[in-house]
Image 1 (cartoon, rainbow over the protein chains, first blue to last red):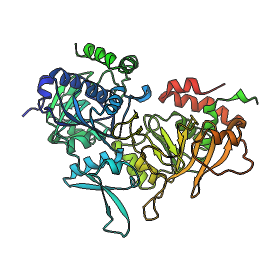
Image 2: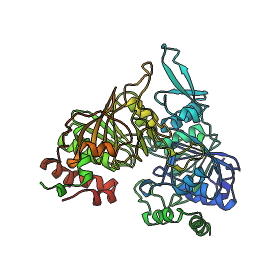
Image 3: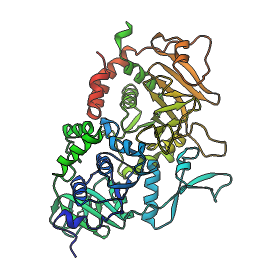
Image 4: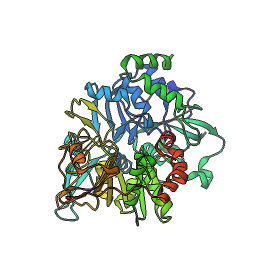
Length: 266
Length: 241
C-alpha cells in the first residue's frame, strides 16, 4: 500500500476533532501548510503536545480556537518573544494547560516508544510542576533506599504531524539528526508527514542516509508539499523573518490576530 | 577607562565568563544571548572549554535529537548551565511560568522548559537576569518552576551557585545569597533597595572588576562575530567599541 497521498485533505484524515497531536519545535520541521488545512477544515478540541516546546504553530492553533488541551514545556515565538495568543488563552482560562519540562515530554514519548507505562526521571522534585501534574508520581527508587524519583507516564499521541526533508515512494522518511521526529513517529499511533521532496529509490539502501531515516513501518501518510513549513525555516533554509515579525505584531491583539488569520486562510 | 567604555551586557558577559574558568563543558539554552556571549568569551580565553549552544548550528554537536542535552546532563557531562526567571527569590527558586495564581495568572510566560530538571543535575548553574529590580528579585516566587534547594535525601549533584544581574554578582550557598561585588560603583545600599529578598554582605562590598582589555577585544572580535550568527539583533546592540 502506498503511503503517498495526493493532498492535505487525505493526509489529515487521521487528525479528527479531539485528537492528540504531537508537533515539533520551530526549528525541527513544522507542518504549517498542514496546520492551515486543518484550520480551513475547522478542526476543534485538539490535544496538542509540543515536543517539547512550540511556537508559531501552537499560537495560531490556539488563537483560532482549535486547541482544547496543550501539553508543553514552553511556548514562545523565539527571539520575537511571547506567543501572544497562547498567553492570552491561558490568562483567560480558555485552554487546559498541562505544564511540563522538556525532558519529561521526551521521557513520556520514550516510554510509549518502548511500550511501557512510564519512565523514571531525575530532577523535578520541589518544582510546583508536581502540584499541577498529579499524573507525575514520586516513588522511592526500588534499587536504592530513601531516594525519591519522579515517574513520567507514557505519552501516546494519536498522530505525530511534521514536515521533513525527503521521503521515498516506499514511505521511508529522512530526518537526519532531527531525531525528535523519529521519537515522535515511534511513539504516535500514526505519523502524518509533509515533505520537501520525493526521491527515487529506497532511502534505507544508502547506509549514509539510513541512520537518519524513519522506516515506513512508522509512517501512515506522506504528502509532497515543498515549502510546507513556511514561513518557518528548515535546515539550511532561513525563516521569513519579516513574515514572522508581522505575525508577532498582529497577534498582540485578538482583532489583529483574527485579521491575520483571515488573510492566512484566504 | 571611563564608566561608559563598555556596555552593561559586556560587564555581565565578562562576570559570567570568569565563572566558567577551568570547566570542560558549558551548555547554553535557547534564547540566551548573554550566556552564549559569556561561554564564547570563556572559550576564546581558554581554548579547552567545550561550548554547546542550543539554537546554533556551529555550536551544537548532538546527533540524538532534543533528548540528548538532558541525557548528557544527567550523566554529568555538562559542568555549567545558565537559567533565568521572570521571578527569582531568596531561596534561588525560579519562576518561568507566570505571575499571580497559576490557574488564572495575571501574566503568563512561556513555561519551565528544561529548568526543573537541569537545575538538579548540572553542577554549576549560573542564574542571570539583566533587570535588577524588586519586581524580578522577589521574596517568594509565585510558581516554582525549579527549586533552589532540596532535602538531603534528594539526588542532586547540581544547583544554583551564582546570580549575575545588570548591577551585581551574588554567590549562592547554604546560607542563601551573598553579595560578591557591585558593577560600576553601585553601593551595597543601592543593591539592597533594588532587591526584594534579603542577602548577606560584608561591611565593605568591592566593585566588580571591569572588563579588561583582552576580554573586551575578544568580546568585540570573535565573540561578537560568533554570537551574530545566532543572535544578530543582540550582537549589533550589546557590544561597544
